[in-house]
Amino acid sequence: MTDIRQRITEDQWRRAELIWDYHQMRHDLVPVDVAIGLGSHDLGVAAASADLYRAGLFPVLVFTGGNSPTTRARFPRGEAVHFREHALELGVPDSAIFVEPNAANTGQNITLTRDLLAANGIRPKTVLLVSKPYMERRSFATARKLWPEVEVLCASEPLELDGYVKSIGDGKLVLDMLVGDLQRVIEYPKLGFAIAQDVPEDVHDAYESLMRDGFTSRVIGS
Image (cartoon, rainbow, N blue to C red; front, side):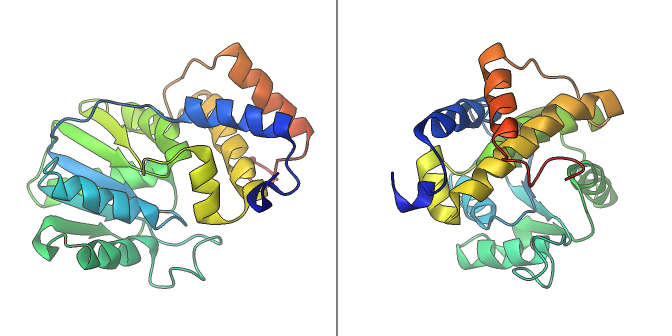
């Protein structure tokens, strides 16, 4: 058991890997009209966005996100502002970047970005969402609900669970986030926030097991 897996058993890790794999859409990437870097605690979103821009996958990049209790200390000027600064350091030209600084949740990331682009005369037909690895499926489901006229692809840093946990430095927190995002994938369609996604039985069983084991700091209502 490595340091990053403290307080996590081998069985819990195996279940977490099932959920991790489910969250990732593993889309085959092709050039799109616009990319959207979804704000969060994870600066890797900005790095992945920069890599994909340099690969020629899109001409326009929007970073979206204000602040939340979990990001205010790290990104005091707002998630999108800090992501833009990091992308500039990585070689993305300022002329290619828009900043949407107000979104407070994933739905607002989508709708406020859509409105910002329209205000600048940009009405994309294809969009690439760049997110945390475990947020791909939820961001896809949200965009398909709120912006159904565009074709949506998803991408994230090319990391497996072990590598992502090392980058964050807290295995318990990452498993909590995996569980919290899967809860939202399951529950948000009932609230009209996202399209429904099929959840395989083994993934659902893994989710319920980790919930029982207390990986619940990021679940709704916790």
